[in-house]
Image (cartoon, rainbow, N blue to C red; front, side):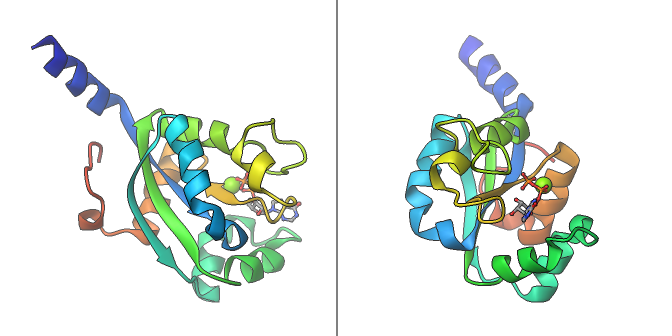
Length: 153
Ligand code: IDP
Ligand code: MG
């Protein structure tokens, strides 16, 4: 009974977030997934997609006025990416912590970006920055039935 309650409580506090393994890190996906698992995150859905320019522009629309926007869209469409739904306690924050700072040169040792990123643009992974954006970004890539064990709405 206690075990059941603990499991139910864990399920209730679980969050989901969106991760993208960027084009030049796709060949290191297994190693990157190990970092995520070590951070307590489960990959509950994943697929490889090759973004169209329109999709990349829409996904990164928040950055449309930034000087790096066109380069970012070109980079994110330069090859396939792996989009993943991650689930775990405080998944949004846990993933951002596992990722490290945007610029790999400033990311803490042992983070994904420090260990797999090349520069501030080619930084290996994307991760949602809030629960609200996580929901929007998951919806952008996944149908509900593609996600194996949905514990939150
Ligand atoms: P985040 O990925 O850590 O959330 P954002 O500021 O949301 O960082 O930027 C989105 C993406 O745009 C980054 O992951 C990176 O690929 C790219 N980017 C951010 N800042 C720069 C920059 O100053 N130069 C080039 N690319 C950048
Ligand atoms: Mg961001």
